Image (cartoon, rainbow, N blue to C red; front, side, top):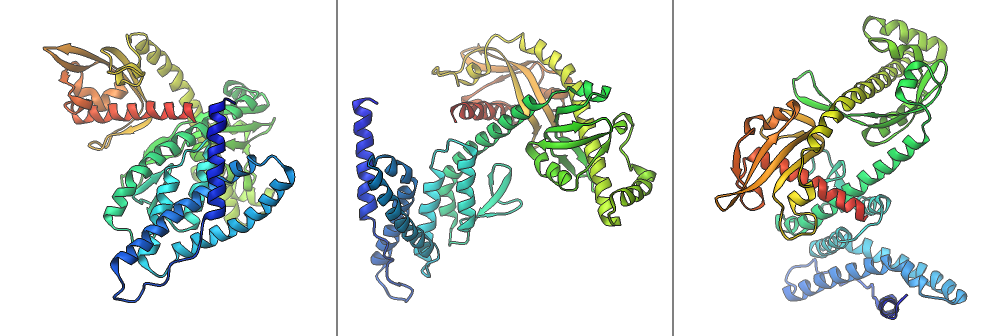
Length: 454
């Protein structure tokens, strides 16, 4: 460690020691009665916000504080004394967040949220732990359709007296955290998927051919329409199945399939291997009652349990068949994609100005959107969209045009083919649908960059 780094660490540790010894936790007096001085109440509210932030910073610096103590006995004493101080800190935080004066609760909650959403996390586990803390303290409330999307869930702020201006003040920090959390979540899924793939020992073709072992497969999300005619999505992800001579059963999964596979494992779902070559799953249609009755006899379960088992068998069969169809489509699409990619003259990072240079670069770029893209002005959803775009100078202005696209991308961008559009600053002069597509692709590239840095 350099002299400068040692000096910075020493200074940091000294500040922590001062905070450790100097932070006070006595709560302000009760201002719930009318007629108290506004400035005095405001000063106490500000003080609470400052001390909440200082308390959280102190808790976060615990390991650094201990690491700076070389003497073993002194460190042991510090650990025991810290435990007392930590109880005091948590009591202070609990008391301020539950204070009977609205302004004090609001000041504490705002400071707590600002601090947490400004942190930098090294892993998905660290970020998830912070989210759990916010939920336990009722600062965030999980809610379907809530206004705060984080990862694959939605939340709203807790009931601490937040007004629209308070929410707006927090919005930027929450959005930034949400992007980082999604980057860490995707990295976690990719790491798990990679480990699952490395642990498999047979291919999907070998699975169909009758070979035993563990088989890794990717199941894409699937779009469908419910009975009301609304567009819905079935979850996708990676899955590993174990194949014996007679049966196939799920072992692990990632993404939206994790909970589903966990439920299958809980009831020990087994799929007859020969059924993989059928046109439909066991228990499909008129055969449901016969298969259900057979499950009741062989597994000694009641009718309701047998019905759930058969339904899970059917789901597993469809997951595997979706994976086979996706693999076939992926191979065909991959060849087409490679042909498009070879025609590029610049990289996507250069097109968007994400390569470290001052300005976006002109040229032909291959762009792709990973996953399902749904345009806000159309019911159409396109999966694995890609196309070629050219940026050029024309009459002193920057123009953008779609050079080529496959049929599935044309479902959204088809009307713009072979037309040239003035780009404007940050794509603002482009047609709305193209602008949204480019924003979405740029966002994925920025996420990939954050994943690489995480």
